Length: 621
Image (cartoon, rainbow, N blue to C red; front, side, top):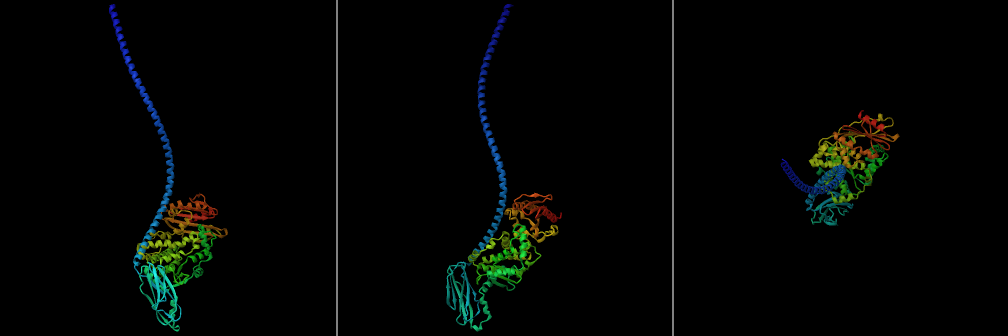
């Protein structure tokens, strides 16, 4: 039993040894595995450390990029705000440039039409011989023996005139060298030495060697005692020339004169006397003072501006001719005996007015029921058609363009050059805007369209400035103002009440706003009425201008842009009023703006209380 136990013990020890050995082997192998894993782990840790360092570097790079991007984003946001502001300014510039491009496109179209017409005229006349007109004496005239006779003739040729020769009874009287001029006028004095028929002729050759057709007239020379009154016709060296001008004008316009028209030539000095004694006879110094007060109420002139003297000087300087509907007479200003190119064109212009009077009745200009804006529109039709006629007259080669430009280049206009803008622009408006209006109608229907315009004359300067609105029948709305004399109290008097109109509204706003702002603010004008009151004792003025607009958006645009006017004028910010008005205080008065729907009221007064009271009377509140 003991041996068995020992064996068991030995076996158990052996088994234990085996177990321990196996455990040792297992532990050794595990240690080796752990060592390997530790080494691998260390390698992994080293790799991870490298990765971490790389990630740290990458993070630092990303963080730097983030910071840079943030700065760039902030810069971009600032630039975006700046660009948005620049975009607004650019939009305004685009609007202005678009309007300029449109205007230039119209000018280009007109210029292309002019060029085409001129090229047609040049092509047509290139192979023509020189044209000769003997202006004086007239054919079949009877003159007295021994009396000096003035011979006047005109030679024209688009290519240029190389030579001309005056021939009397087959013998050369004088040869001329026009130096290749396209229009040549000669004046000679000749005394007949025998009675009977005398042949006066002119021949000419152009620079291309083309000789003129024979141009001759016969006059009769009689003894002195048999001279008749018919010889007086020869004394007017311009009679033949004027007759030809009038014939061309009638042909171009398609209207033959119904009656003869009295023509008067005045020198510049004689014109000044005529202006003072006739044209300004009904315009007194008091009238001029009232007009100056109205202009002053809208900042155009100083209150003490001498408008009477200025008007006299301006008209004396600027009038090259005029037509008087009351006497059916038109006057051409000339300091020479023979009309030059500019004076010929003036004669054509004024004769067009004579035809207008005979066919359409220019007494319309004296209609006292027509408001100021409608009168300006009518004058624009009158003058616009006459200027259009002048352009056709020139394009058809009836006047020497080179001589015309030469004569115009010699004109001096110191009074106009120094004129306040509103006076200069008002003087030019009927001719410039009137021409564009007439040209638009002519392009649509020829002179027949102008005939239709005389049957339905324009009613506002808006229609002149926007012919499409005239053609669409967009007539001005009637606007009323209540009397304010009682409201203002003792010492106040009404100076003037009338319609301002789009043209004058543009002139008013244009003193402080740029062209784009003016166009936006004024577009959509529907009608208006203004009144100006004065208190001489207090040297004070009150102005009220009530406007209506075509649509709500037009009223909103005006209300948004008008504040720039008083803000710039007074260099101050506005004060909001309890009734919704907005007012600006100046050195001596205030300007207030009141907006309600499609209606706008502007008031200028010596103080805020008066301005608000006047606005309340106008709105009926």
